Image 1: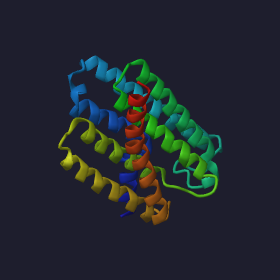
Image 2 (image 1 turned 135 degrees about the horizontal axis):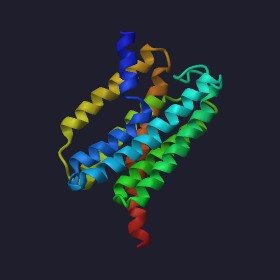
Image 3 (image 1 turned 90 degrees about the horizontal axis):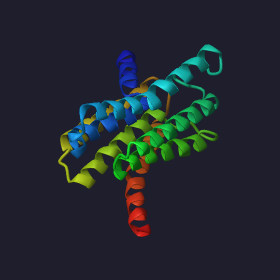
Length: 208
């Protein structure tokens, strides 16, 4: 059971969630008509800035003794990794902006950045699950794509609900978080990616 929980935690690692979200957008929205090389640049840029770069920095922190383990079990050791992830997400947002991606897709990345910033602040007082935060954000992205393009992504939504349940359960089985910590992380990730996108669109329409 612990082996399965570890596999789920790796496959659905929070550093991969934004990449998964962009991959869904490139597969199930009108962005699917983008040339292959444009998709590769966008997806590769997102993966590099939000997964590879912060992953390498966190690994180096472990090697030099800055943090105890890759799981960042100790809440007090999560401050620098959170700052790294926030900076990496900001870099990704700038990259997406320069590539002139649609506003709704950029807003999803902005929502992810806001979720990380809030989680960073919460971390000073209480440990919140980054894994649940990530899968919750991905769920919010799926819901937003359904809203914007009136897509029938219920099979994908059900699949991600199952994935969310597996992630949250895995974190509890591995004794990395309490149930309340994973519930809170999921809710924070979902609300930031979904509601922030809606508010951003309304604000954009208002100022126009």
